[in-house]
Length: 327
Image (cartoon, rainbow, N blue to C red; front, side, top):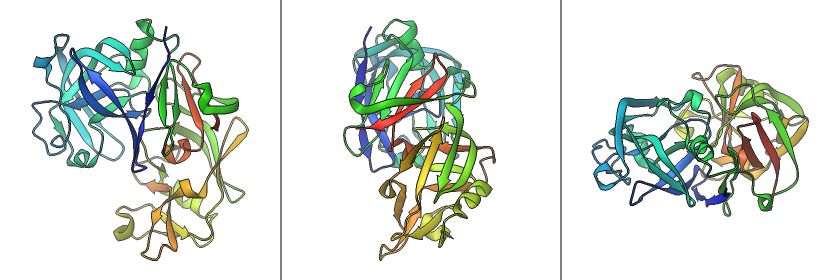
């Protein structure tokens, strides 16, 4: 039984990506590890979409262990980006740990927006119950094949020293006790929590811990309610923020932001909460909590803005997610 750490690179604070290989011999890909989905996909050598063009592509004819499977893969993400293509089975290796017979898609079509991503594809780390392929995830296969002692993994996200730790948690990346929060069910990494802002309760309810989302997203009304506790906050002009649902605040007086799980409060630093300047002078900042009409009122998508503030442990067997102080 092994535990292995996969170094992750910070790609302009938008995602944290790491290297995997698929096939025999291994074909290399830079992957976005996403706890908000449950499928692995990379571009196919047959993909002609603009979204595929700048990326590494999987060629099944060059792998002695690859085989095409029945069915087609099709997924739509929260930002309405899509990917689709045939399903394959092959050996997938991360940090020296190999899952044989891993099902994935070599997509032949993907949204143009993926051309802007540093990563070649996505590896889902949620539960296989939400897999569009309908197959065990990479973590589940590693565990069932005896490669790791538990279907558990840990994330440390930072500007340097980031990693995905497979088979447990890396004690060298956090200090003190781990606070555990029970999952609502085995689909997403969804639990109950509270977000406080300037001493007031900005939101309380379901939260999905999602490494594949850069910011913290909720419904339009949830975001509006949260930002009502920040004096001088203003809706961000769509021409500035390139989307509706964002808010700005004076950079000189950032809000005090924290999240509470199982009674323990974790603060988000002003630097991590700042999603960028809204003006040339740098006096107005864009906040990292935003709203969208595509999200219902009953949950927040808690992404990397929060995960940078903690060491996060995802424990499938015990249906829980843990948070600790990072080092």
